[in-house]
Image (cartoon, rainbow, N blue to C red):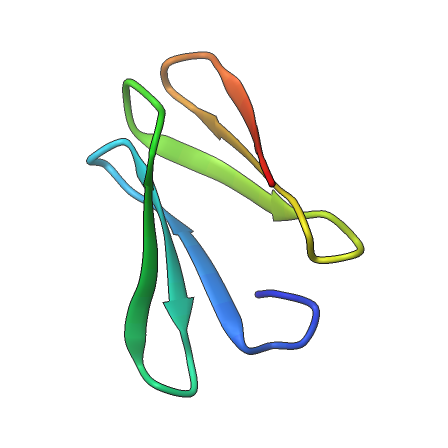
Length: 63
């Protein structure tokens, strides 16, 4: 969840991160970048960045 609880972040087997708008119940953004399943996600304390890790053994920082 984002700090303001308006967005939910999910990692997917299709190697993308998905940002969900909870109030509208819609997919807000689909972020490709990993080469395998994404299984670790975290928001920065300021809510401006996201870190993701996947089975491709990469750590990505999204701004």
